[in-house]
Amino acid sequence: MAWVVIANLKGAPGDAASLAELANRPKSTVPNLPAGRNLNAMHQQEHVGWWGFTKDEVTGEPAEMGAALAMLEVIAPNSSVAVQRIHDRNTRITYERSIITPSNNSWSAWRAFAMVDQTLTKRGVIGDATVSGNLNNYNTSADIGFWALWAPYNLNTPKDSRGRCTLEVLYDAGGGISQRLIERESGRTWSRVYANSAWQSWMDLSKDGPLTPFVNALKQGKNRPVNIVAVGDSNTEGYGIIEGITGRWINKLSKGLNRKVGSWYGPEFPFIPARYVMSDVTTGKPVSSTGTILSGYDFGFGWRSVALTDNTSEVAFTFLGTKASVMFTKGPVTGIMDVLVDDVLVTTLDTNQTVLAPSSRWDTGSLEYAYHTVKIRRNAGSPSGRSVYLEGLFTWQNNETFGVRVIDSGYTGWKMTNITDTRASYLAQAMKSIGDVELIIVNLATNDARAGAVVSDYREAALRIISWTRGNSIYAPIVFVLPFVGADQTRADIDKYGAELGRIASEFPCVHFVDMSMNMPRIPSDRSLPESQGLYYDGLHMNEQGHTAFAGHMIRELVK
Image (cartoon, rainbow, N blue to C red; front, side):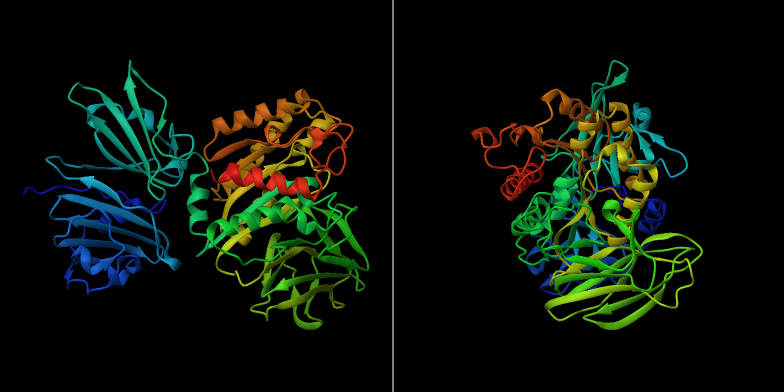
């Protein structure tokens, strides 16, 4: 059997070269793997090397590999990056995969490379953080082979590609050139052909579209956190649900998705803002305040942070759960904050520092499963003129390390055109603070339509969300939602914003558009008419039954 050169196709963004170098170092062959060994657990530096095994003796191997003695190659340059290759001596196929989440032994799917009378040539890396590559330039027989790349660093990649990728440049006997791009962690694959001196459009060979990364994360939701950020207006914050805000569509979405992944845990309020902007709902609000509390600050989820300005100021959060985390802002004009858990002072924090740091956090640690109260006060020792800037409280209910959490980022009366660069930046920083954000839902158009917002301004505001999240290394899919048509609107009023959201989704990777106006009926001026289907509280807002329907439609759109 002839020697076959296998390309190194893995690497974290920016260190593909170091991985390639590591792959070319000599490795010791260690004893055969013991019976019962789980290959999924072999991703630490202690596992680097060649390991002999047979399929019947291990778990986590490719299902289709042969039964003869095989070799496992482990490459692990650090604790967060690892690659496995299995060389099947019987079928002459090499399988390869990369680690996704080391903490729970989560890997990408195995990918097979047939080694039948051909050589897979390792060519190099395309593009980096300083100079973008252009995949259109790889169109001659001199470019044949495998190239490693990171999608954001390159031009003319498929719209929805992201992260670590491999580009295969292929050449057929007739002289034709084609490209195949494989997204390493998801396995998504695209293909295109070079014809008449131009590249044709990429063809998505995968089952799913831009939501694939979220769908893949959701499948692991029973074993890892899956955070969803819901940006919206009063219909997200909960205006009109007189029965209590636990009836919101975001609460129902969280429950529905958790049931899909087999997780029954989770708090009613994964995130409680320091204040709610809506004023009509008084039942079941998990936050209250006394003393001098000022609003109008743009930090945190939903831009609803408050300032505790004197020693009478207090904000109290109440929740059922097992852990909480206070989100607040540090900065050059901030004061000293007291934190009380169940009326016991547990810490005093000086939030003052030279550099502004929104969405800083302090955790309670583990708590007994029970109803708890977390109170935030301005400490009497705060220098004059310095306030405590509070953003909200995260809560957990026996789901600290797994499960779906839909984070409320709604603001009553909000428009897409309210989103400035500063506000988009603060939203992105809040996402980085909580981590594990796998989906961003933006449900903003109703108030823009009512105000007659200029479509170009609407577009620019939507693009700010994309720009600031991606600029903060948050590559979760973004879903722009066109809501239902209100009683004081026409279809034409709302459709022009839907058309723009559809265009944005067609232009940007990992961006999706959901037209909820095709699922939810228009609100008639007389809500007693049958066409309203009993879903609405008034001419603009859903009632609890409407929120249930909205959540159901959203689940079907996200997980088809």
